[in-house]
Image (cartoon, rainbow, N blue to C red):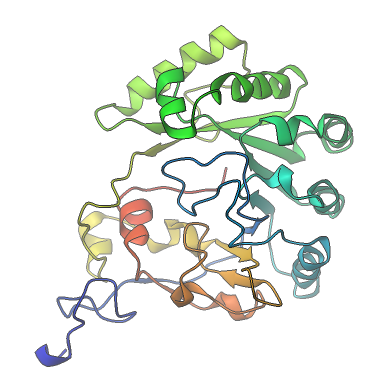
Amino acid sequence: MEADALPEEKFSDPVWTAKGERRASVPLTALETLWFNTGTLCNLACINCYIESSPTNDALVYISRDHVTRYLDEIAEKAIATKEIGYTGGEPFMNPEFVAILTDTLERGFEALVLSNAMKPMRRREAALLDLRERFGDKLTIRVSLDHYTKAAHEAERGARSWEPGTEGLKWLSNNGFSIAVAGRMLPNETMDQARDGYATLFAELGIGIDASDPMRLVLFPEMDEAKDIAEITTECWGILNQNPADIMCATSRMVVHRKGEAEPRVAACTLIPYDGGFDMGSTLEEASQDVSLNHPHCARFCVLGGASCSA
């Protein structure tokens, strides 16, 4: 690439890095998981929420049952081999149509993964959840966000008085035989083994039926410093890092979002980047099957270098 044509800043060109190297991209190998953002409204305002969910942020409006149905119909009509439907927010249980959406999903035979804080919005739906548990068993998994195994670190992220309601909701799910998982964070100077040991102790104390050594049931994310400079990912990085692009989250997933002010939902490349127009993949799943250019700091920080995945 000619020097005078170099992008002026990192992550500003979908094809070239600021150093003039070809930017890495990820092809969609199979749409194994389709995510829906149910809306950014949440009963909490966590400090490091990647999409800034809060009690007042409705940048992503509540997804409607009819709109979800449209995408589930497309999966059926196009014979897309999607196994799992994921729901995130905000807090999904704040969406007034969510129980109906979840029921539709399970009735169609999909596995459903719901990311929740297990607090009051979920607890209000206990009767409906018990019915779904009875009807569909482990086809429904609820993954509870518990940011640390200590109350102090959890509440530093999620706010005062969030620990007891969250752990009580997790205990309710465990006691009633739901398929459950926990998503947590590792503190900057904490090792993976230390974190898993800490959660194991907590689960034993609370009587939670989760094996903390199982990475599918205790999903741990490294703490991310978004102010820290991060390298761009080039095509050469796959070999240098011994990484396979097929292992990156956007190789097997997409997320449907309904942005405020837009008439219809759109498909985003990633659960972490719902607002950036460069990651808008179109209005249908067919349109969204194109390659994803890793042209965002989250691509490097969270997925390639951090090795994260939102799916269970």
